[in-house]
Length: 307
Image (spheres, one colour):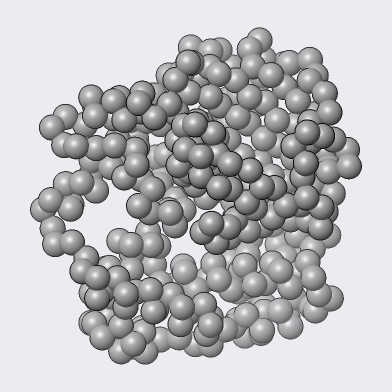
C-alpha cells in the first residue's frame, strides 16, 4: 500500500480543455488520471476526479471550510470515520473540517464529482426555497450512511458527464448546481415534515437496529431470516423493516448484499480463490448470484474486476 503525499500528488497543471478552472495530472508513481477543479461561483467549488491508482492507495486529509457533497461514479475501497464501503453510484456528504481517510483499490478507476458549498450560502438558500420549515444542510449529516437519492445522484452524474464533455459553460454548470440544491431541499423538507407529522424513533428501537447491524456484520454468510432478526430486535417484522429503511435508507436485504459483496471484493484482490469458492464463503450457493449482484454494484463481473 502507498500513502498519498499531497505535496507531490499533482505533478503539473496541464492545458485546460475547459475555459475556466485548473486541470492537473497526477504523479505517475500513484497512477494515471487527472483532477479538474474550479470555483465556478464564489459560493461553491466543483472538483472532478478520474484516476486509476497503481496499487492500494491511502488518502488522508481534512475537508475544507464548506459542506461537501460527493458522488462516486465508480470506485472501490473503504472510507473511515465512520467506516463505509465505497461502491459506484454512492452519495457521500462531509462537514466542514471533517477528518477524511480512505483506501482506494486499483482495479476500478476512481471517478468522482464533489461540490463544496459555503456554509452560510447553502443554509440560507435552502431556507429560502423551503418556506416556513426550518431546513439546513447539516440535517443531511444525520444520515452518514446515505447511499442513494435518485434525483440527487442523477443530477450529480449528469453534471460530471457535462463537465467531461469539455463544452461546459459556466452559466449552465451553475444552473445544474442549483438544480442539485433544489433536490436536496425537497428531500430535507420531506424529512422534516415526516418528523413533525410522525413519531420519532426512540432510543430503544435505535439501539435494537444497531444490534441488528452488528449481528448481520458477523453472520452475513448465513441464511439470516427476517423472523430471526425481528426476534433479536423485539419488534414485528413490518415495524423492523420500516424502521431499518428509514434509518439506513436501504432494505435489510440490501444491507446484507452490500456486506457480502464488500467481503467478496477483498477476496478477489487478496486471494487466489475461485469465484465459486468466494461465492460459497460469502453466502451464495450459486456463483451466478454473486456475479449478478457484484456487477449491479460495481459495474464489472468479479472476473473482470480481478483482472
